[in-house]
Image 1 (cartoon, rainbow, N blue to C red):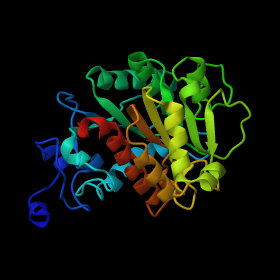
Image 2: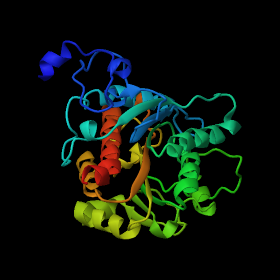
Image 3: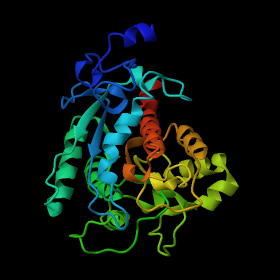
Length: 321
């Protein structure tokens, strides 16, 4: 009785007692959390913790992604009443998912940021809970990967992006959203032979040994071939999925700091993500959503869908048992 339930449901981010189940709270009212999950720091009995990192002090063009987590959460209220489309299970009912809130940090103490974020993710992983992180600029993936590599060893990276983000940078004190995967390969956090970047359409001659499926290859080869290459590359290795929203063409996601034409369509993205079911995914992030550059909110809506599909990928093996 969804309509009847909506009469009584309000502020489920704080009033929800059960971590499982859909939400029929009015989409235009109430306290906002990701998919109307409960805000809590308690990780007991939790499968997946969604957390926000409102940091954008590493951007090279337009700022604004610090506002991304808040708007992605708001956009996700559209998805909270229904089982995620296209999946053979209902992640909202079958998985214990919480909103772990945002990372607390001193915006004026940038050098301390990376360590704080790594510790934040370590607390989640230490409770045997998977994390889905809402950014923030893409530099946040590096400190997150530190925590994941510490627990699982070198990760297979599945990166959706317009940029490889492997430009050389051997200065460990720099925080840059275009160099973090260069540093991650150098530091042994990711295994380049088992990693893949999808949707690339900017020039960077040194691939660091990572497999590249540029946007034109995806358009011409199709979804099935793309999914097959990802599965072949990653295999059964523990994997981390990092989705830069600028992997999408600006026609679908204009709200980002470094848009590049010729990108993936939203339909391609949804089909690829759903067909990645079965990979040994351990965590993921959705980054570079910059609300000031998209008054329609379409970019955040895409981010909310991607975050939801990452949750489904994380829960695939448990929900198929």
